[in-house]
Image 1: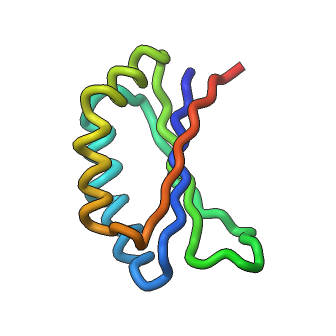
Image 2: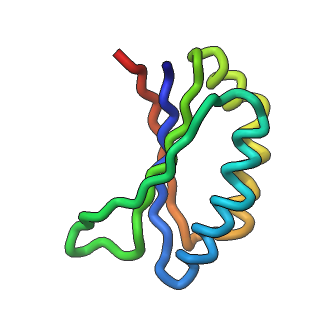
Length: 101
């Protein structure tokens, strides 16, 4: 199993809108691509003293690395662009890929 983790820091003033949008629009759109079999959305509870906003991890599970690579090539750019258009500099994201052992 391959875990595609997207860590997002979101500004406080748009956090609730972002959470709703993720649950109602973005995550369902990612899952509808068919490249993932499950997901989790988690909120980081411990933040550094200088951190602003809130940090979340969205974890998508793919059966194979090939599924993830195909998603990243064919679907991700269009889906990610919608996040950038909607939230711009009010969010920062970084992505990691992990393999279950």
